[in-house]
Image (cartoon, rainbow, N blue to C red; front, top):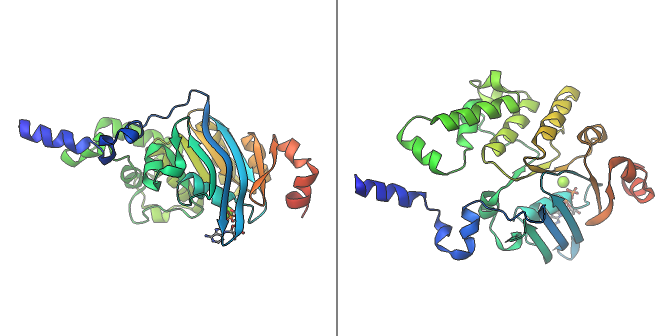
Length: 278
Ligand code: ADP
Ligand code: MG
């Protein structure tokens, strides 16, 4: 019995924890002492000499809901690729909280540290139920280990139930995910991200293809997530951005062209010229 406990205990320890430099990572702690969750400074990314990002600087506060707009090719997706470790910048710094240097972490380490990303196309398990999708998305921690030995524990059940309500799929829990509407699939994927308790959520065009009603409900969901989470939302839908009501950053040719509330950036002549006026 004691031998089994030893095996089980060691099974909890993530591989990085013996490395002192990653110790704070695996415990999930992010240093938020200056109230900044994400800090990019002078980030540049070149693809064959073409600068997709050109000295991009951006700072997101803890609990903030930030919208990123800008013409196609402005570098919005590339910026998210840098934050999630998919693309390494050629120069510049990127910090998650005060201490985690994103340019030195792998994609799984960044996800584990608490950055969740939603891509445009939902990546749900179509043949599993909505409930199972949320279950499968659980963070690989003690609770998952426990579930190997027993049925789902009460905490996990409660968490899935809470998430189902939040994403308005509580009446669809036992439905096969492939049968959901486009909007419901998007919400399910957001729910799957939430199961991992990310501090920062990156959402690339989350309401594309949604009905007006689904878009409005998504706006309500995001507003309810802000505060507890920080959100960076890339969108083109101006009514949606207005509903969200946060600060807006306009990207153009890989840098920040303007930043402020929606009314301010919408009346900015440079923004009208490169983006809104077309
Ligand atoms: P946005 O999301 O704002 O539309 P992207 O970040 O996708 O812009 O792209 C910015 C620019 O970088 C575009 O001109 C795009 O063609 C280019 N780009 C993006 N990814 C790559 C890549 N892997 N290789 C070459 N060029 C790329
Ligand atoms: Mg894009």
